[in-house]
Structures are given as structure tokens and as C-alpha cells.
Length: 343
Image (cartoon, rainbow, N blue to C red):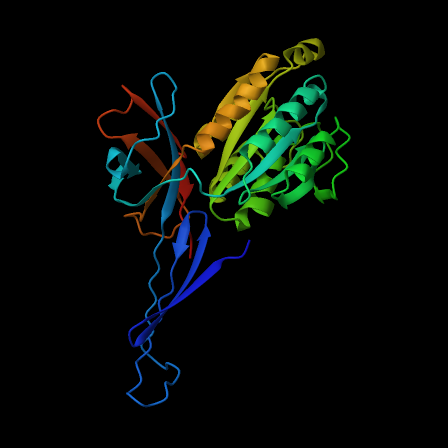
């Protein structure tokens, strides 16, 4: 998706704004040229160039009441944001109900999903048809001993559901881009590699609301990348991770394999502003996807310019609260931090 450039004329000066949104940053170049005298031909500017660099951190937030119901009627003055404990001024606010979505649907096709894959496919197809709107984009990838892009970004629900339906346990899929993402061929579930590759190769060039929806039990085996590096990549891409936690616990019991997937999914989702939704019964699967769709249509966008201007690449902790009601009445779901730019 290309960045957009905007050109407008302001009196005798020209304002050229080239806007690039990447990792929550907004870069604005401002060029002021001396005006030409009346009746004279304007000449290119030779001096007097002023450049202003402003970093804007965007935070998407979901607010629920104490019973888990979504709250959609708040305004800018209801929110507070701190960065590393320092209060920040909210400069941009909107309800992102209709803002375009860029999504990556990620399907676990490792052996542990053998008995639940048909359920994943069915509910994923329902989700695609429910959540997709004409201005939204989605891609589909699977992961097991490799990470493979089955369908590149498209708005076609037919192409997306076809890619989901063609996923196979440890057999990949029949998508148009086989072997797109290389991954070390050891182990059986390259979940961390899938997150890292989706963040760095797919989402890092996209703009707006970026969401990964994972259908998995959260257990990783054989990834080249670590959990920490996968999480950092997602945070740098400003990608929210929603996890549909579908576990065949009988598989792990029969194989006498330890299971730690729940903790992994909680960390990936909670740190990026998403959520883990457990599926323990067949009827829970459709409800899980409906819950994700409802949250994506009930988000708030909060933007602020950090008081810490250092471009040092450090991790900055973010906390979003509701004035006077946090904890007692409302719970806020938002990403918990970001990496400052460098250079």
C-alpha cells in the first residue's frame, strides 16, 4: 500500500506534506518558499528550508465494563495516557468503527491441530464473511514446519475462504505463493517464526489498523525466532494479535508432551492490545470470532506526541486508563508499549 502525499497552497507559500505512517510515527516535511513579486515568474527556492519532525504514537483501545460488555460512548476527555509513568496529552481522538482493517489470518496446521482443523476452517470462513468490508484487506497464511503465505492481501472473501479451506495438517496448502517464507525445517510448529515473518514481511509496510488473528494452541516447536523477538516485531509493526486458543488436550496427554501454549498466547495478545479467546466446546468457536469482530468495530483511536523526544530505540511503556473509573467500572484493552524510533 503506497503512502499518500498531500499538496495544498497557502497564500504565497506552498505547503508540501508527505505523510508516512509506520510503527505509529507520523513524519511531516514542511517546505516554505519565498513568494515571488507581483507579475514576476516564481523561481525555485534556494534557501529558507525548515523541516519539522513530529512523532505521533497511535493507540487503539477497547473498553469493557465489569461484566465484559463493550463500551462505545466515551469521548476524548474520558481517557488518560501515560508513557513510562509520565502523563501525555491526547492530541488525536476518534472512534475507529469504520476505519479500514488490514488483517492476517494465521492457521496452525501442525499435528496437534489434526482433530480441530475442520472446526477452525469452518469458523474462520464465517469470520471472513462477517468482518470483511470492501475497504478492508486480509491475507491467509499457515504454519507448521514452514510458514507459507496461501493468499496475499485481498478484499475478496471468495479467495480468502478458498485459501482457508485448502489448509492441510503438515501438508501446507495449495495457495498461490508456496514457500514464500523460509523457516528452519525442524520441529513441528513454527509459531514464533510466523508472527515474526507476518510482522516484518507483511504488516510493516501497511498503514492503519493492523491485526493478526491466530488459530492455534500456542505451542511452538522448532522456530528460529524466539518469543521475545516475535513480540518485538509485532510491536514495531504496530500489529494487534488476537488468539483463538483451540487446544486438543487429549493430543498432548497421549503424546506425554508438556503444554505451555496458554501463557505464550496471553503474552503475545495482551502486550499488543489484542485478546486470547479460549475455545473449549465446538459452539464456542463461532462466539470467539464474533467477539473479535465486535471488538474491531468498537475501538477508539488515541494519538499523542511523546514528551520524551529521544530517538534512542528504547521500549516505552504505555498505560491507558478511564478517568476515575479504571478498575472499578471499566477495563481498557490496549497495547502496553512501543519502541521509540532511532536516528
